[in-house]
Image 1 (cartoon, rainbow, N blue to C red):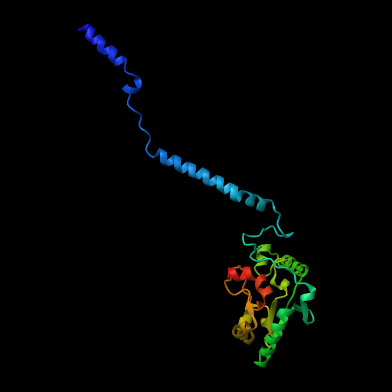
Image 2: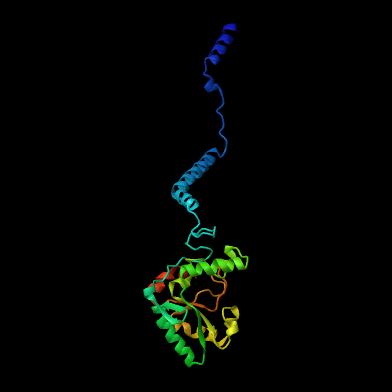
Length: 243
């Protein structure tokens, strides 16, 4: 009997531990968590490769205009305004003392003024082409006088290099019969503005900053731009696409 017991003990002891032990249970969801972690790491690596250099470049590039700390948005706008080139002297014509326009806009505007006059409307030109230097002077001097931040000032006036007036295609218009309404929202209540709403498109002029415009610029019923040529359409393509 003793030998039999001893034999059973020896037989059991000879069984490898691995076979005598219960297999360990793996934690539920472990494989899924590992997969998710791998995907996160992979996505982070791709993002760094694709966008890392762009982000670094954006952070390293200084603000484009001295005195304005803001940088252009992804679509190129600075404080809501797109950048525009300055019209060359050879493309500008004098409409009246102190007011110049690109010759393409000037021809269309002359026809529009004549049509308005025939209808008894006294449209007046208030401001046309502005150089980048003049826009810089207007922007920063008024900003300082009114104790405004650059962002506050940009709501009503474009930063230098970002004004439609610099292209020579933009014109500010008023009503000669109601001069008190010039360059104010009250211009929308004049006959001149109502005439423009009904007729300006015939001469390829559009209101640049209507109420609630996507650029976030204050409503300017007096500010119109010419879009009646290929060069003008190209310049204002980004603004038109945004609207």
